[in-house]
Length: 152
Image (cartoon, helix red, strand yellow):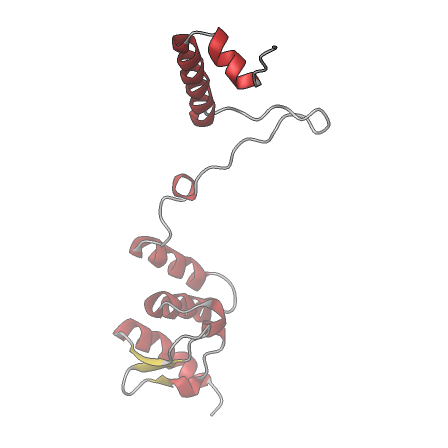
């Protein structure tokens, strides 16, 4: 009578257990090393080598906001340039102080500005809540001249 074995049974009967367990451990080690190793992708025969990896945003731009000195420089440069320099400087000042988006800044109207009380009523976009913001002295002074020239 001929005894038949499955492939696994034959392997386990002919190969010592220490070799079997050593082989499994060796293969697992190689697989985990390949997973954790930072390998470069193989060059593409058609398009050439792969492009370099993109830098993280934190390394490219360490901060997102301008400092107070940088804003002052920007306001001074805007004030000194062109026909509408004073208007541009005032827009930068108001946008920075109240955190306005560009569309919110451009949509401001004179009926939203209350110079006597020092309030700016802002209609927020993108499901934001409309609110009244107190204005500082510099903003009020900057807005008085254009307010006087604005049509009533």
